[in-house]
Length: 427
Ligand code: SAH
Image (tube, rainbow, N blue to C red; front, side, top):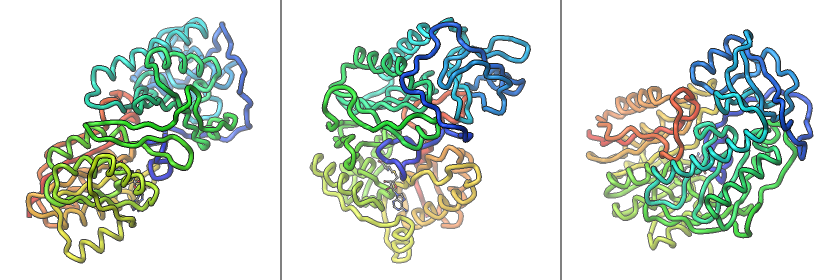
């Protein structure tokens, strides 16, 4: 899954893809074995990982993949022959298998039935947890026990994305699409293709586009705020669904003059509007700001948009002694790998330090990190260092994460990636 500065339209923020190079495979149209599922043997480390509750086994922990075809549904065993579960196999990803169930499925048809059931369960879960929104993530891959599948709802349009060989299989895709149509009755389904992901999974090239119905644009409403959504190439719009509950939380504390840094199409800025005397949104992307302005008009709001590099702008504003009552920081993922952690933490420290210096006493800082590699502990420590350097005292009002439609699996830490800390600041 991807980072938001590179693929803002996909609205995915982190990557679960590691890949070993091998030859290109032609998968399109090839049916998976209808019965007699292949067996994959995993070593002690892979078995321990699955028994410990994780759902991935890396390629280096595969002892033998037997007859498993790319994207096959396979039965997983340890070296002593003990059954561990049924999984989806990838011939190219570093994540060689993604567990689907601890049961032993006996056929490809059983897989399709399981997929149908899981989709229905994912939809039912959202019916319980999503409030005041016709836009939310319907299926969040591993966290909905459907590894490699992402489905978002934007009012009457669904966005569909497959991230693995198994989910790209023709029969699997058809099952998913037909189940979504039956259960959700969308006006349209749009497929979002991430060429980089398809390349990593060695899948044939496919274009993004409408795969059911005909519309690709709609209006969505979350927390009473309207946004344009348009999946068409060149005018991709949408909202960061994972921040939906954080928008509402930020609005509860926002007051006075507000600055929304890394504002994209105005997610936070539009929510802060009714509670603040003046709102400024900053982003380096002109197209994002153009949509932000259209969103502001849609909601009858006056917001000032500034196209700038956030680091430069914050430096200039802090030097110039500008002050605010509410500042939101929601940068793209700085740490895209473990190695980049130190640099990322320096980036977070600089941003937060400058923001803290600009907050008036009683001010509110809403600060986010969507880098999976930056833990909540790392993030809080960096924030603490920034506060000390800025000579500010921060009281944590809320420690938040991604909205509930992006569930987190306890034993799959990769499913938790978004941090959103809300602080009140005194001098
Ligand atoms: N807060 C937004 C999401 C932010 S996504 C929302 O809730 O909708 C991150 C944004 O950072 C993207 O819009 C990207 O254009 C912007 N961005 C990336 N690097 C930047 C930089 N150096 N300065 C300003 N904006 C930047």
